[in-house]
Length: 463
Image (cartoon, rainbow, N blue to C red; front, side, top):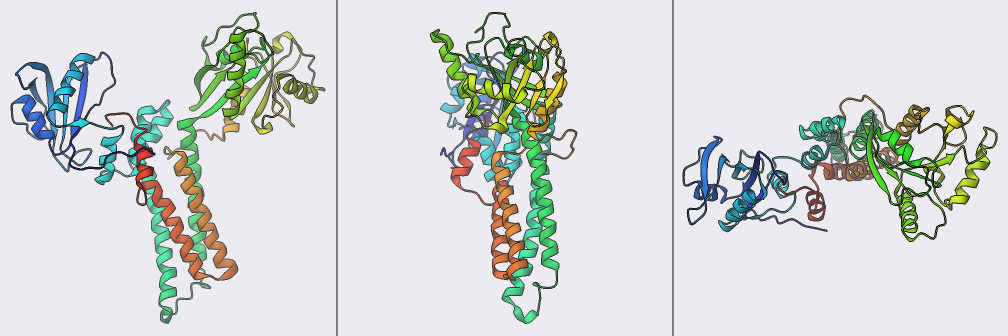
């Protein structure tokens, strides 16, 4: 896995603003030489935490830009090191020319996420806050941004620290009873340990639920629309996205490639993919589209299989048979059944009622053209994702957080079992030690270089 340089001796620099034309562009410099580099560029002293307007010149005296320069002395900066920000005019040529001069004066280009990594290594933030910075930048909805801010302010960290404190306290109690039997602490029968473990498990479940909801708001779910040509797949994509994302015609095979769109349903991001109509074809371009459609189906969490009610003879009495026949016709019988949702489309041309048609399978009737029955499908997608609307106190979470929480919960459950079934104090203490380490992985209390490299290398440069 990628590893970032950890040397405290290097001074790093990067453009911290997005590329392109803008009113300003910012270069961030961090490290022991940051102040020296800035004063060389400005040829004037810099007062800590004051905005100084200065002309920035190279070694030959050539004017590079006129900028606002702010110096943040260590340790009171984002990274905990000396930090300088050069706020110059926006534009590719100016900002890159200035960055080249900063590098010539002794800095090196920062690796992705290296500023945040230094903040973590210098105890300015923990891992959950570092990841929240990236999640805040990438937030695709107001709810996701709110959750990222909650984590950045230490909301997630606070939950984990409370759990860790409870685990440590009961672990110390158990180990003291084992190591000092003369104190006559009967932890196996006094009920204190059992009650504490039950309370910890309850809080772990609550924290896990909040983390799962936060992860949903960050990642959303992946939905793929599949079906025969002209079944109305592109029309459904347009109806869900509420804009003309895909071309819609009466000509079969209009969509020849995959189309991606991200929508929100009550704050839940849904990544929808429209695919080429699945059929046998001699058209080489359409063949590629069909192959790509099947690749997308493998990655989907929910697959909407469209049934054209105008083409197929569908009634409420033969739904099961039609669904099975359509999967066979499309060559999709190998798909996991729990991913499948059948959409009977174009009911505006039939007498079929809108809404859910089957309790045994996920079968919905709607008209993508008129949007009749669309709200029922949206409700189903939220339920399928496990989304619980209007929750407060959520925080952003990633797969590694959920994995660590699940392992910690399993360790505490095992500790409770060791206590109840075997009165095995030593095993209880060992399981609690394991749970403590697993929760410590979330905040970075227990980590390794490979984990840090993977986390910070996914950040943008300049953060």
